[in-house]
Length: 181
Image (cartoon, rainbow, N blue to C red; front, side, top):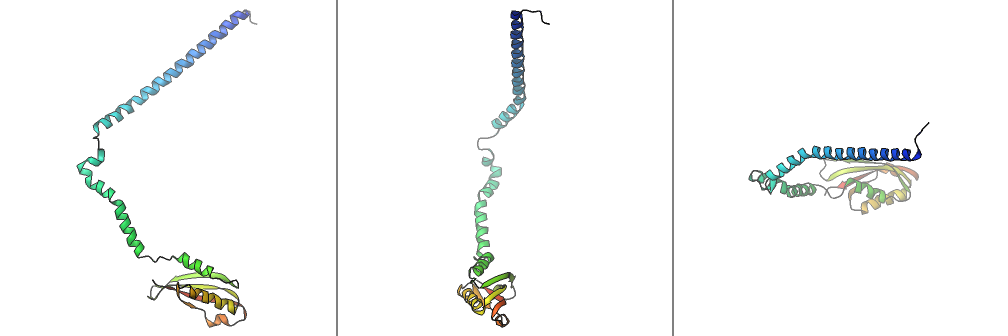
């Protein structure tokens, strides 16, 4: 039971709202003041560091001239090393050889496997690719080998005679020798 009149109740509510706003503003201003005080040490440290540092900084110091020159010459050193490495590499990658082989496949030939072996003992060839699969007939297998020879990427394409014994569904194994450039 509340015995206060309605006007008194409104005055109490207004006073409560006013006190709440005052307390909230006081807490907000106190948090800003604490934050400002917390940033002061870092401000003084940073401003002292920048006032002590010379205008050019690290790069104008004569003790560091050699290291600066070394850093600035780094792109030239990298380019010279890259050109040296690229001069010793054949321009055609192994993936290009494989894609050329697959690109020369006629419709009657299906590949089961492609195997690459690097031949370091033989100076004439840099490697051998062994291609095995199944051909529908002799003509499609022979046309496949002719297409590979026409690419001029391979020094020799050898089909063993045993691969040509059947008339249809010929299992074959073909040796493709990569040219050493």
